[in-house]
Image 1: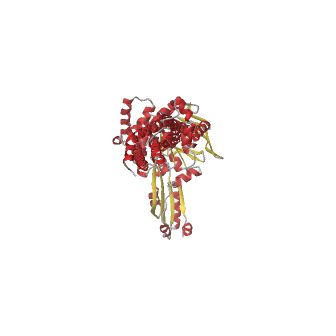
Image 2: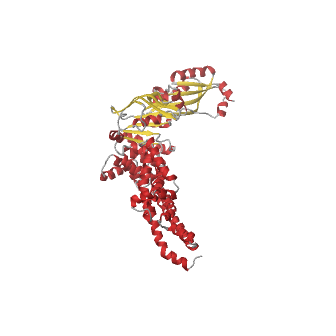
Image 3: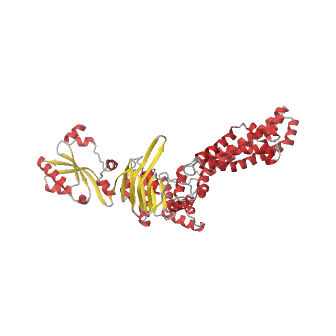
Length: 343
Length: 222
């Protein structure tokens, strides 16, 4: 378990004082994947580096399994670090050493005897599916492969905690997917606690259990991932997820409707699987056409958005809208005059 | 320009003087790389907040290194003659000339080594620190490995500069190929000797640069 108590980090940059982390209180449970999201400059990287003291906090405590590590030095601090792995945005592999030697390095760090090191590295290479790259230098690997070496290296000493600092931000979509799947698999196999910093909400959706949103050095919201996506409270959370649930129609299409109403329906939580559209079609004398839609599954719960056009008599449309309003999480009417404005 | 006389002079002395240059440059490079390398490491470690940032130690070391580097070599050579007398027991000859050359090499290489160390990617060092490794292991397996191509290039530059400096060794009777060219080519108007010697120096320098580049390239692993 990781606990941060009233952690503050203050930098002095020339004449300016930068308060990178402000009064951070945080408890991360054993075995969970905890995400910290925020825009760049929010202080998330500083915060994750406080956990292994790559960044010393100006004040406050960092407790790992109940032990305050902020006062530790030398051998005692190294011992704590041996029990944490870390992966980085730019992989940070030793360019002059092979994949094998890069992973072996951390085994040397923990004093594993030579004959056992070979065995363990082979095992790790298999875990990250790079057995054929043992004697290759990092420069000859793709980004995804480099990060897999990073993961193997981070896991070599069987740590209980894995810190990930923007670990997918330098990767393309395909490689990101590959790394997230690997982390998911590792998490299931090893029951490791993962702390993951990112600005990519897609990553949050796929990997995290809980998430903290950071803004200007402060944690402004903590919740489980589904709730953050379904019911963001803070402005920053809303703006972070807005891109994710944003769908747009070509203007020409919206303008082509001369009658009826366009509505945007949000599906969230318990009732999102209810067959609302077909109920409306049966109950009222309206025609529904689905213009656009998107459904995400976060922790196996759906979160969706649908753009629908209703046509029929005004009274029937009114009744249908009323019914929909009562049965979905949120409904938004795209007004005709709004469409005119667009013209 | 090149006549029988030229050939006789070259035959009788060129190899001997080459040998003296080799000793002077060899010894000073070896000691310069070892001591200067440690001094460069000290300069780097005391300037890096990842290790032992220490403004005063860094400043003092830096000033001493800069002082040695600001001496025109010919002056350093003379100023350090008493030191030569203490260390090698004489103020003249190849051994006496090697002492100031070594001091110059130490200061010269210290700055280059510091540069090579500080070019090592900070993230890679942070990753090593985060892994819980001992400092000695980080120095040996990360800092040194990553700085190696830069260090090799620095050694190449040092050797070539020292060959240039060693031409002034004649001032204290140190001999060497540079002094040889001056003695015959300048003082005795044996232009042929000067010409051949310069060609030999050019070839040696090219060769050292070529070998240095090859070694650095191999250490790059890219």
